[in-house]
Image 1 (cartoon, rainbow, N blue to C red):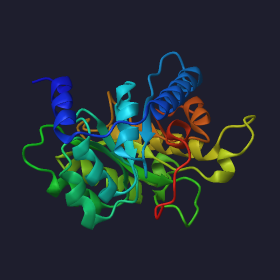
Image 2: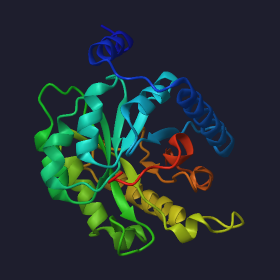
Image 3: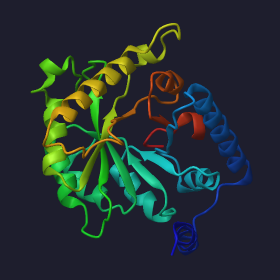
Image 4: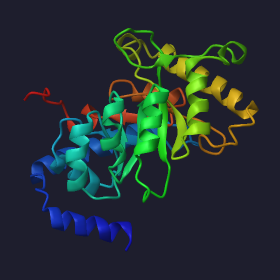
Length: 277
């Protein structure tokens, strides 16, 4: 049974309420606009992934976006993702982009179509994910290491890297090596960051320093992994670590800075309600 048929059967069995026509039109137009802006900001040789961030949005909004051809969606809260995923087509690629707590790893790992966890910052969390993935899963779970490129205390993430010579014993390198050598059910896909608001609002006349920092960290980590005989090429895509950076306010700058994945929520779905609304 192919993915399309499975998706249709699942939609029928769960009887998801569809978005009203005017809401569908709004989402369709916003998604098309963002997709066009992604194309215009990307280089001719790149094919970036757009992740539609659906935090606090109902399943009907996600389904409307899905029916417009979108397949990659991002959620920030494990419980919200756990609730939404069974209601929606199983060929959706779910990206978890919120703070990862080790005690929630089992719930996250049991979602059949979880595609990537973009916020890994510790060996404990990585090991918990690896241990919790069910035996029937046939593909490794993609993971990104979150890097705090701005140095802000309020943001999660590991320190960025300097030169390859000084980075060998860093937390970022050690975690990457732990995933590659000790977590066979995980695939180290790349690095992720949430840039500072200051850099996001800065003039387009200069590069976003947070994005430049992630790019440099990625390049250094790639260099180290290529020289590590234990890595066996079990990382990235065709010898290249992916980078996930850029959100609604700065995704175009991120794409110009070489991002492979951008995460856009408000630009597609509109302003979000607060969690208690």
